[in-house]
Image (cartoon, rainbow, N blue to C red; front, side):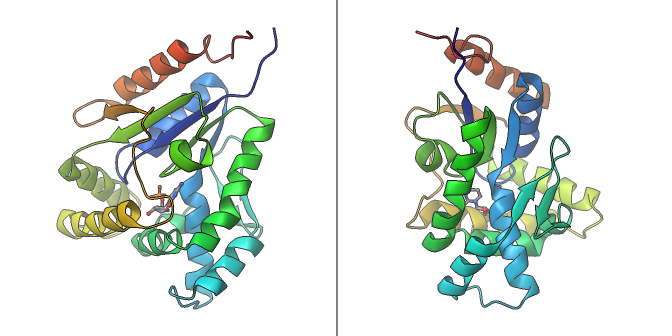
Length: 230
Ligand code: DC
């Protein structure tokens, strides 16, 4: 039996639970976990550090093309130009800048081939905003995770506070709303549910429940995470 590489595409707005669920599903299947948002965040971090104007599309594209972005094997770490920036990528400032940077077409043109390249050598669970719609339109398994805005803001606030950042739910709600609005309405690859993506509303569901739903879908569309040869 020939085994082909499989892509599990997980898209959705911030705070829907994508990262945690995608990582757990990848662990269970033995697939590589890729957080595509971390790539946009890495470019944003570099831009913020060197004072790049976030309206300078050309400069941002150059940064995206020259950034060396690497994922640690199995530990969820992200490296930018050789430095471990995993923690630095998670600040509220970088979140907002990443949303701006990701709206630049040249930045997307630079990063998407890298995302596709990773799936050439391994089966992946990749999460983002346009994974099922643009990066892997032929992915066998597409999931769109959502949750109501109040729940997403609550989760994100707890996450930021857990990291020692000062965050209150009102400020986080406003910032999520702004990011969602930009991510959904930008011209290039806006956040949307691909027609063939399975919607999972995670409001009120436990992580175990969401993970089970995704794994069920994988089982339904493959043979236990392995492509059936035809
Ligand atoms: O998933 P995240 O919050 O880490 O993503 C950070 C930003 O990057 C988000 O506001 C939108 C953008 N992004 C994107 O445009 N396309 C992706 N595939 C992933 C993230």
